[in-house]
Amino acid sequence: MPKCDNAVKSLVSPREKHIPDDAQRTSICLTAEDRAAVRWINEVRRAKKDKRTTTNDILVDALWYFLEKTESRTRDQIRGTLPPVAPVLPPAPEKVTEIHKPKKKR
Image (cartoon, rainbow, N blue to C red; front, side):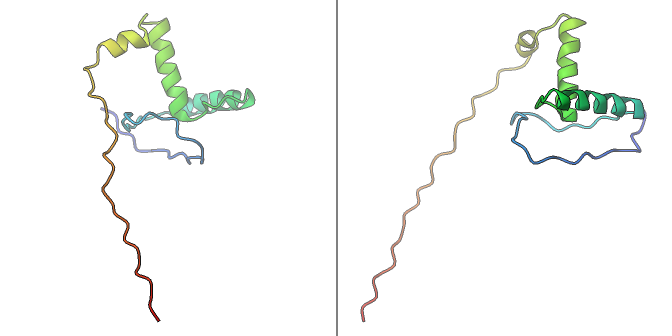
């Protein structure tokens, strides 16, 4: 298995969160050609004022495009292969009582 010796870290821009909470972090190795292709797509999308310009956005879009066009698989078909996920319940409110300071008597 090839090693990824030249890892490239991208700076994260301060913007609204757009990655789902159930997403898992992973790492991939990209060649100089791969990075150039991602940068080119990034610049084209920025020129179009598209918000999906991060490397993650570009690779996820490419994955789904490949699955739909080449493998003839839709998101719903892929979702159907996943085990059911229990709904996430919001945390129960904490029982907090406010204690008022006693009035000073002078």
